[in-house]
Length: 317
Ligand code: 2E4
Ligand code: SF4
Image 1: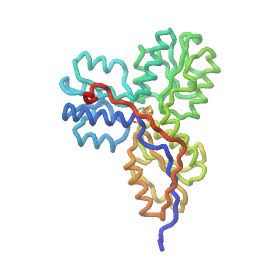
Image 2: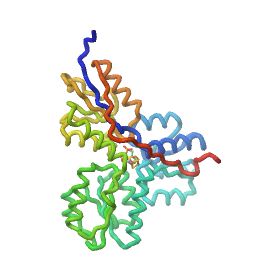
Image 3: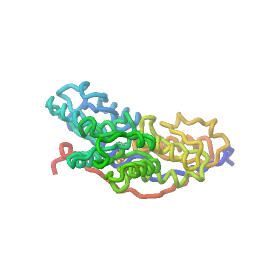
Image 4: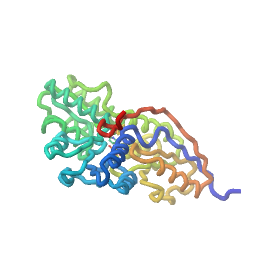
């Protein structure tokens, strides 16, 4: 008989890679096939060290600025999006560039432009300094997009004309926190125009809903993801806010604090949109080594979204 303590792992679904991440990684792999190494990538293609290291091994070179890329090598822009100035600079240098911005982020860029053409100033709900926020704000001239991060920020923001305003959001925000920020915006600026709810994407929404479904029945939640991954960090917050006090971000199995899990009987596992399934399996295996583990899948939605890679990388049909 097994001497290991019994433990149930509730495996959230959907979890892990979304369509935008799948596409972005595929773009780097296909670019390496088409042009050979090195292919440069501006910023981590997605916020995951394991993914980045795997692509480095194939010949991708990751840099933070376009200035760090030689004129004669292809460059890929990360899934988070880039300010307009970046492709413009690549064009001016006659570089080959491929935009791996998730189409759902590009959709927000287009929304911002459309509002701007209609004479509206924008309020963006997002996290300061995050590459997606920088990229989206960088679609319009300076001063045309004002950033709010919290309900308190809404009281402080000073638009040019409260009658000519629209709002947009980052795609990876907390659904629940954003409801409150949008309500505060609508209360202070009744004329504000916006999307039906916000611009949070399907993958963010589904992963948060799956965590909510398990949070009440677990003693601990482990979110596999990176510290710089916004959507992964939001999953940790959703766990804590919905009844699981011990919610932790782990990059992989070696990050698990086993002493903190002593005596625990039910653990939830999920993964951010940039975290590969091999790391989920690694974590499950680490549990199996220490506990008599039963895995229960808790599936709250099914996803079948797929995005095409840019034409420049498609094989002749
Ligand atoms: C682009 C947009 O934005 P976040 O920090 O969550 O990015 P990450 O790379 O972790 O996830 C993929 C992604 C990329 C999400 N939204
Ligand atoms: Fe696109 Fe959403 Fe995935 Fe971000 S989390 S890459 S917006 S599908």
